Length: 503
Image (cartoon, rainbow, N blue to C red; front, side, top):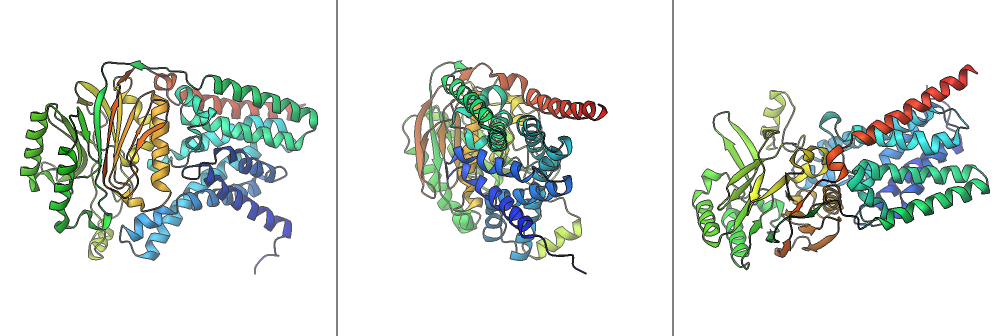
């Protein structure tokens, strides 16, 4: 028998939780409304004000469904429109991922209510909720391979809060945003004296962050590097068509050879849509041209290891300084398939992807260009900032190659670039992004995009970048201080509540 209908207020509250989560997407690119971020978070806190832990779990889950449902809808485009997965299966996989990520928001809401008793407005808003959100956001970034997309800090990369990136990393920026939401919640729940105090505190904090906006933790190291980034804009539907192979190679060759003298030219992920043994003459020709011009070429290509029969997603350095970087953090159901063999056989029968790519080793040597050590990432790896710390501070330049054609004309390529801006700010280094259909861009150490190519148009970027040396506080310490502080806040709240209960 179905239970009694929910009271109207409860139904409205649940709808508000979903809408609030959906509105949080507007704080990211391409909408560029970062100032909005504290409002939906404060609304979630307000909904939790008298909620029991079970109700908090539901409010948080609905908030997460709105947040990730509207922010990662492009998964369907990747799976169905471009990946060829049948609509029912594409929808199922998309909904499973959205639900899985929403559970982390639910966990933050549950922990907030579970740790703080009703009426503990200050403790809940300014201590526990920011710490709980940061802990669950961090957990989402590594549990079950991790999905760190839409960490709140990414939307603030060009705001005063972004100044914290070099000190605390993206999770410290997230903390500042959620703290603002908590302050807004406390201001609503308390009187005018409290509101004036909080307003003054926020103004002082923002002024301090703004005054240190141009603080530089790294320094120039050597001469400028003359670079060229090439965007072929090959539609994903044609990219692996055998008839398109030669036109693709001709396009990248022509765009590259038309460039003025460059020290480094970068092509996107899998720019060469073939295995090396299938195009040996082309690769040899490009190598000879690069050596003759005293230029380095980095190109994305799939490679094959016959000794163990595995494929690798590779960034191949061609020219005087040769080398290979193999992608380490792979995309589940995109590059590897944790499925039984009978399921893989069924996928092959359905003409769907089923073969896995192997991950590269964790301790790969850095690629170099003109002697400049480079930290390379391929596509999705850019979202895992902590995994790049092993390359730093030795690396003096960041390079990311990607095939964002998988996202289609959605918000995902804009979000991906914003993630790259955060990596540049965290490390205090230039970032070069070469993507198939966009957004190819150059990002300076302050996280500002200095050059970009419009999406879905072939083109090149010609720029000079200066290698940087030194280490930001985040490069030295990683995420440990922020996560340790968040754990301490939760533990302190638990101890405070236990002491209060014994009185």
